[in-house]
Image 1 (spheres, rainbow, N blue to C red):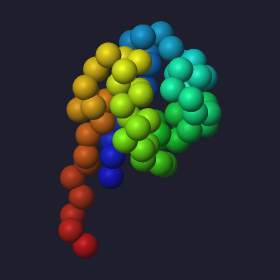
Image 2 (image 1 turned 180 degrees about the horizontal axis):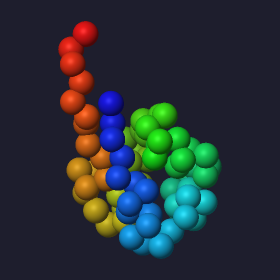
Image 3 (image 1 turned 90 degrees about the horizontal axis):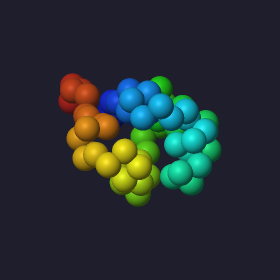
Image 4 (image 1 turned 30 degrees about the vertical axis):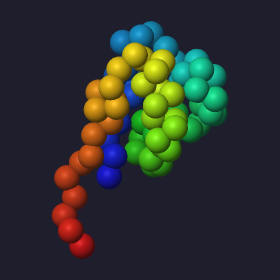
Length: 69
């Protein structure tokens, strides 16, 4: 599962979900779903978000440990 630090970055940059969504070309709901962990973003979207915040992928997202099934 992918863990997101997106909400913390938005807060640090004083940006709401709608503003970020507009900058990366998705809906506000998509940003909310990513923050909640409901969906995992595409690589393209991850890179667009990183460009907005001028950070590395690892700064925004990390893999949570999961047990093998």
